[in-house]
Amino acid sequence: MKDGKLPQIFTNMHSKIERSLSEARSSFDHPGTKGSASEKVWLRLLQEYLPQRYVAESAHITDSNNHISDQIDVVIFDRQYSPFLFTFDDEYVVPAESVYAVFEAKQSINATEVEYAKNKIKSVRSLTRTSLPIPYAKGTYPAKPPEHIYGGLLVLGSDWSPALGTSLTSNLATTDKLEQLDIGCVAEHGNFIFDDDSGNYSIEQSSKAATAFLFRLIAMLQQRGTVPMIDVQAYSQWIED
Image 1 (cartoon, helix red, strand yellow):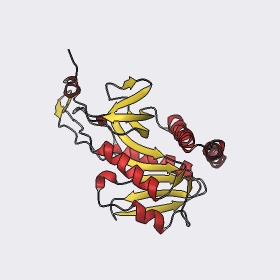
Image 2 (tube, one colour; image 1 turned 45 degrees about the horizontal axis):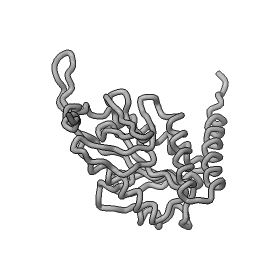
Image 3 (spheres, rainbow, N blue to C red; image 1 turned 30 degrees about the vertical axis):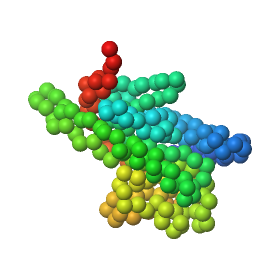
């Protein structure tokens, strides 16, 4: 049996990702345009490499109480078990029950962007999520409690020196679970991941951070399983005659 080409495949994969992110940063002068370009690069990455049961789009997230989140740069949500998806003027509006993870996508990480991401993620986790019992051949499974929605930040570089030092971890720290950043990628330097057991962040420095982030995220999504069974009737109350 001969050796395969996985190291080269992953090297090429990372080079493609990093090149796209760098081009997004250097090609646009306007901060808003630059941020939009970065968002699109991360979306393309996730759309290309995530398993097909997941969808990645920029979206608002709504709940059955008619509350809606801020616009979120990257939303990873279910399409296999979620019965509907709204579009309005080319904007996606996703039911809260279908969401697995949300990310802000920026050019560089700093205190302002971390705080901004915390607030955006909190606006999603604060929404109501319904869950119904699940019928099967021999009876009914109890309703699945809605699980923690993963939240994070995706950037190319860092305004701190060192990039992944105490400035990063001190700004990530929070006592509010609703605004916690669970995972993030600083493509030029590495990744950060919140460890539930220790209550601290682990830092993974890597020359192929974006590729490592992708594999870590897929593993986290696999552990999460399937979203709860949505109560569609709870949304139907807003249908006007």
